[in-house]
Length: 255
Image (cartoon, rainbow, N blue to C red; front, side, top):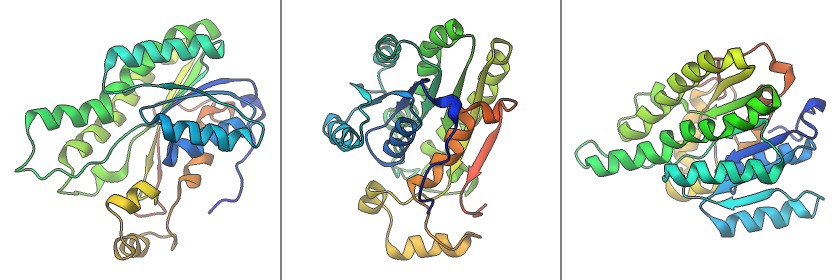
């Protein structure tokens, strides 16, 4: 696992918003952007986890801004992103990270559970980007980093709604890139592989399932949230200034 984050000097002072930033991958990203000297805010539904993260980061001299938000509510997303942009004094970078990979058998899926999965995993990506646009336009440009997943590439039969949403994120990324490129707003995507988080271990992963994925990977170790920090910082920074409409797979070589 990487021991430290790369440093991109142009991120210092930038206003960054991370969705789903209270735990797991999102918490690693919040901490990493704080470490770059950025002005960081994050949204999450879990206020307790958010306050715990803020307390931890405060020990290192960083205090990110936080707003509680149910990202399933499109109006609430617009309101929260706008409020965070005003609080941070702008928005230069949006990281659409929040997701929930519920297992749903094809015979048990209902229209309601299908719509819930799209709301949790896809719809807020668009409305967060839409709400961030006025701030990025005022700044003369910006960067959006969307988190998809390799799940839709693996023919996983127990996540049809989730896999559809994650495939949709790649399509959304390319469409937004085409529309916003002329305004100097870049939109790229990261597709993580199996990232071992506490939530994943509590709900889905076992030592055996982790071992099976490691065996499939070229890199023979389990991947952790920190493995996504470098790619995300790169796509948010001017180091990737010529990149947009692109997808980066971070899966240890599993696909």
